[in-house]
Amino acid sequence: MSRLAQTAGLTDVQQEILSTVRDFVDKEIIPVATELEHRDEYPTDIVEGLKELGLFGLMIPEEYGGLGESLLTYALCVEEIARGWMSVSGIINTHFIVAYMLKQHGTQEQKDTFLPRMALGEVRGAFSMSEPALGSDVSAISSKGVWDDGGTSRSSGAESGGEYVLDGQKMWLTNGGSSTLVAVLCRSDEGHPEGTAPHKSMTTFLVEKEAGFGEVRPGLTIPGKIDKMGYKGVDTTELIMDGLRIPANRVLGGTTGRGFYQMMDGVEVGRVNVAARGCGVAQRAFELGVSYAQQRQTFGKPIAQHQAIQFKLAEMATKVEAAHAMMVNAARKKDSGERNDLEAGMAKYLASEYCKEVVEDAFRIHGGYGFSKEYEIERLYREAPMLLIGEGTAEIQKMIIGRRLLEEYRFQG
Image 1 (cartoon, rainbow, N blue to C red):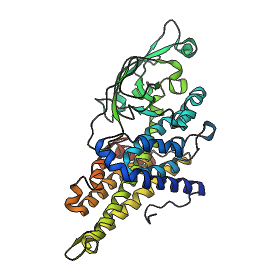
Image 2 (image 1 turned 30 degrees about the vertical axis):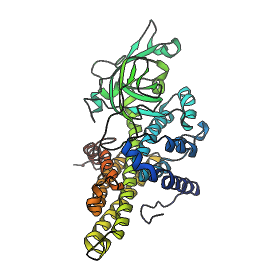
Image 3 (image 1 turned 60 degrees about the vertical axis):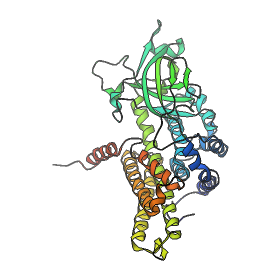
Image 4 (image 1 turned 90 degrees about the horizontal axis):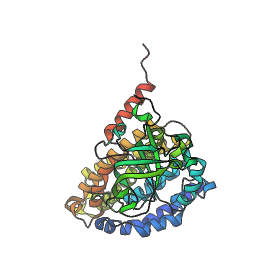
């Protein structure tokens, strides 16, 4: 266990969970990650191992068959998993955002239907906000969910067999192929007066589907995997809806117009997760750098004895420690029931930027060998950039942080 990135105040149960995950990462993920990543191969055996450990139910309440653990426990587990291979952390992240949204906002029937099977990993979650033309501008969503009255009122739709018809194209869907339940954000203008703010006319639909690619249910197509620079293994896809019929009882929470708030609540959890991923990747890059620096010799001594390298190691370790502390603070704030958008934004921004810098310094320490696919740092060098844009770009985080600071420090004149 390393000196860096320790977390004070953990319970015995939390420490036992982390120890188990760390052992799994060291034995089952790190030895195979680079080979699987280079082949862009889905880590089936690793995922089955995570199911056996109960990690798909980590934050799902015990009454639904989960472990009922905190966001902090989850974030620390993600940090460990990302240290082994960031793509694996992506597989469980989207699953947990959907599980969290169901726990916080779902109807009792929706919780009873999905959460027990999600805890076992039998139902695998994904969520979808982004579209090809909008990026971070969620208010510009054009996918639509239109009520098909069929002679029934919307208010009695669930009991009368009423349904919505969804049309549109979504983008950057992590777990798009392997998931069987997707939370999809669409515009739903029915019943809203003209001029309603865009964020008040969005609804989250719970879309059940078969795993795989192609037409996975009538009106729903997952075209195939997007070929990416890094973050391989995990499937990232588009999602195309063309006359997709969804029953009214699959509106998250049973009420339209709440989708934006539900998704933003989930994204706050996701931003803590991305911060944890940045911490994990940075830790692994530091481990690789400090190890290589003690083995590689130049001018008759290990390069770790050169002051220039020691300065790099000092900067890298300090960034690892600082990012971890901010991530832990953001998770604990959410667990306490307090608003944490400021802390989550800061943690995500700092951890992703520091991760990029620590990985690059480890790459530089490796010299020419860092450019070789035989060395693990080459994979990390391609993975780190995804954290700069995932769950909102650095610029979006700074906008959120700036606005929240102005709320907190409003000028009294």
